Length: 399
Ligand code: HH2
Image (cartoon, rainbow, N blue to C red; front, side, top):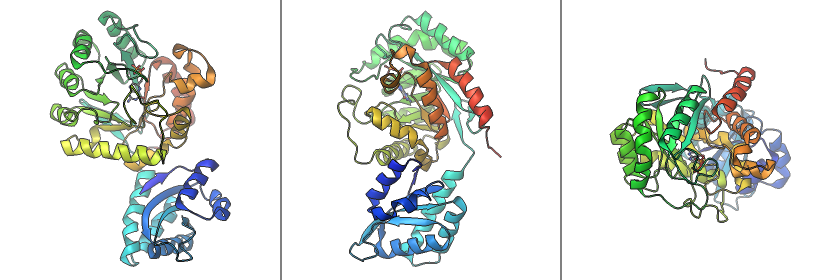
């Protein structure tokens, strides 16, 4: 099961083509794509027929392969369209049908629960971020000589500490400190060097900063060191895939984590990344990362997921991710988005990374509209002000 966000006609057509629905029906589905859309996979011909008929009885609709009706195909995927209420009644009716169709009832119920669930929180250290009440901000501090937007500015421990405290004062809920740039083309930084850069900064911040700290690293050695210095979370842009000991280290230390989707590794990730099905690969990759984390013993309420804007993605991929971000609701976990100052913004507005504020705010708000509840940003004060306006227009709907 995967929730789809098909509010844009081109995304709808792409998904209907994938299922093999008759192009003559695409216009009909366009009128129904305003509610929920759920992709279901590998249905037998009988199950696809039963699902389609049940959907129609309940006022919903369902796209299946055009050859289901002719009997020339044995298996088909499906996209089910309808309101939450309609889909619940589809699920209820299916549960009384033959087992090939009845097994879909649980998947459809889960999809509706994930799409309509309003309470989201993320435990970090001893704090509980109530994400359904307001969007939270992760402020970025790069203790690096070469980060794409602020490399070299905070390499001196004094400057890094001062900057982190400034971001805290501006309203950051968590401060993310990195000692290794992951910009396209960057080379790995040895754990010992990351630790050397981090040590004086973490030592002071863990005493002086009142909000929790996270460390941006793919190395379990660095994560273990950070835990001993009082850091509450690990932000791993490889989603625990780069270092096999990472999940265990985070679990043992009782830390929280951000699991990011990446295709490839920073050094080569932007060399013409290709996806067969972008959103399916991102949601599938994150689901795998989450199961890696949970099997190691990390509590589910300590995990946030991130689609990895710019991590093995073209500019067009980044646009599609932001347009369809609400598909990550499939995972039932808080979504963090990192769009701040990135190249896909500069490509549209011009300007070097430090001059991409308007585009950053636009992309942040697009991410929030798609369900992101934590934003990783360099410009905390400005994004906080933009959110004050946005959240007055769209107040929290927590009941
Ligand atoms: N982006 C960067 C680094 N870490 N972490 C998460 N969770 N999501 C992101 O999108 C993300 C991230 C890249 O930004 P920055 O840290 O400013 O640059 P650099 O990697 O060059 O230090």
